[in-house]
Structure formats: C-alpha cells, structure tokens
Image 1 (tube, helix red, strand yellow):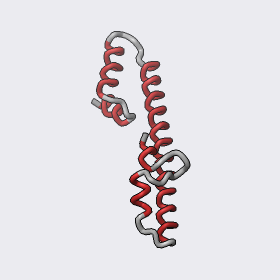
Image 2: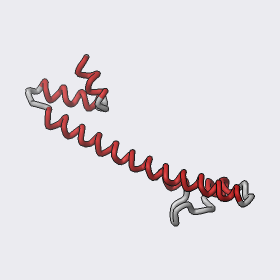
Image 3: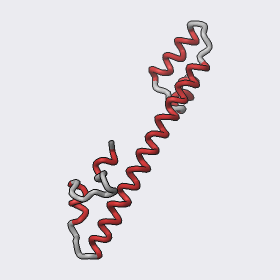
Image 4: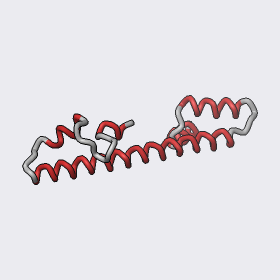
Length: 99
C-alpha cells in the first residue's frame, strides 16, 4: 500500500501503477519504465505551466484594456473582449488562450 500511495503522490495513475507492478511481478525491473512515466508527467506539467502562463498574460492584457477603457469612460470594454470583438495581442482573443 505504501508503494501505491508514493506512486500516486508522484502523479502516477492507478493504471500506470498496475503496469509497474505487472512488470515487477513478471520478473522485470520496472525502473526504466517508471523513469519514462515520470518524464511524461514532467513534460505534461511543463505544457500545462506554459498554457497557464499564456492564459495569465492574456488575462493581464484584458484587465489592462479594461482599466484603460474605464479611464476613457468606456465601461463595456471588457464585454467586447470576452465576446471576441477586441483582439488582445494581435491574433488571439481571450478565448484562444485556452487552446
């Protein structure tokens, strides 16, 4: 049970943990497989961090545009940003940051 908890704490799914245990039960050393799984999880985390950073930049841009619009008395600017009418960084709108 401790092995399973530790593997889950490292982000391994139950399916991945089962594959590791199956390798071990079959007499193989699963270290290379586990290392590969960890590398895959690290790459996934790096992609998610990059996506979140891009989303953060997009949101900061939208917020800055909303502040500028408010200073000019244009209180509805943020709604146009969300609806996609006002590009935030050239080609992307707030909705594009999620993809």
